[in-house]
Image (cartoon, rainbow, N blue to C red; front, side, top):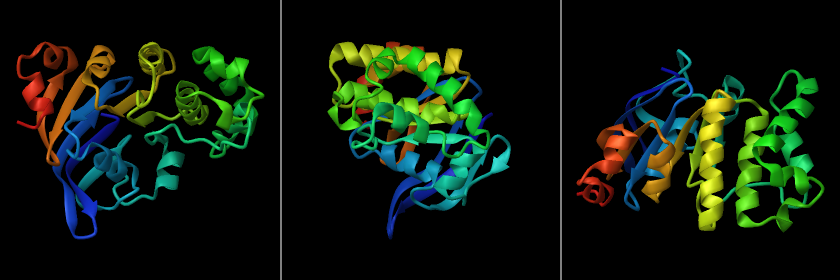
Length: 236
């Protein structure tokens, strides 16, 4: 397994939010994490990436224990994280944002080729390469955030609510691109999503969280067809 999380607990100060979560992501696999508002989905991503400390449990990545690594060290190890909202440097151009995505690469000469690959995945980023990031639409900003993350060629991409604020047409394009990240770029994807339908369409496996614990784990297509899907997403 590329990512192996076992018995993970984490929270904010004295408030424990993640309670003994086990989760795995394989090579070139898309894994969705679903659940009700407040279930702990984003907090789980924060704990895996090191934004909040783990209070118990273990996180292994590519066979290495990374439980107590800083986020910057996890980026160097091959992990990338795109938080909710599509963060970018809004006063810089699209091209400059993409170039900055390769800051951790030892071989800086590979950046132009990586940018070309990202622009093939997201054609609007080529068309608007000289525009300021702040002038982009919500969907284009999400593309830019994911594209900049991919410049570093991570082994694992963590996405928090990639469909947030997007039009239905743009959501379809975003999820098609996410599937392509695994199929064509060779990276694994771990994504958090409030809207389950699109995530389950492109995911290989899914987890459902309820109050900081895993209440379902299994193939995404089985969950999509389950009569219990609604109850699970409500944490019942």
